Image 1 (cartoon, one colour):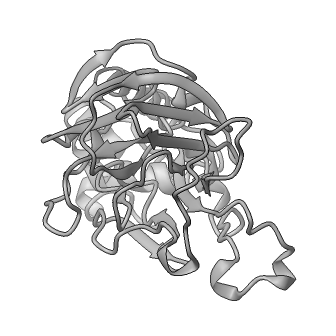
Image 2: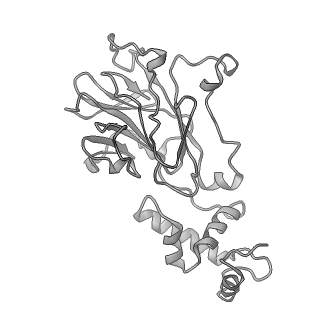
Image 3: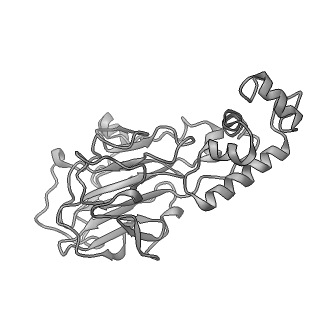
Length: 297
């Protein structure tokens, strides 16, 4: 087996420390448990960690840690990344905005739902609000709306979570942050419910569950959060009779997005390029502001 460290010398030093089996080249039970314990401890303090942080904690070369996490997960199931998705609105224009690495770093009039909290310009304003987004499962729906009264309302699976904020600016864009267990989100208009055989190739939802390796699914759940724009379901969402969303003006993600995001399906699907490696740089925004009472879900 190829060395797990940076060269044979590094590997031999690791053998002497008892960190890798001298014959198999595989990590010993003790080092696997140490890595799991260290990752969990680091995640308690920070939502995003790096290989270097694990390296500094365990004194194991970062390349070795990377190979352990990526090549040996089919034997040792490493703890899953925490969190799933963040969603909200911002008054910042995506055309001129320098996107931060995380949606919670947005400023200048930004409201983000993270977990069960609401943050305004990065500071918590509502500690406990609605369903915990970190507990979303594949296929769940999350949404956000600015009402005609300037109120901010979030939706989970079509159910309003109540007013999260008021006095919002008249011009706000929806923003989504893909991180943790969330590897992909898709905007799907409610009327696009025909079988795949009747839909154009650009409208067929991407699902890369089968393209991810078994070892990857042990670390990152490929959470595909369905999103759609709904202005017709008056039983759940306030109806705005003045809003008519034409096919040419359907909400989509703006082409300028996080560096680790890949857009597809006419910019209506956003997918993290390397969900195992990075939490950061997964922010996407809508290409136009939300209309009054328009639900982005």
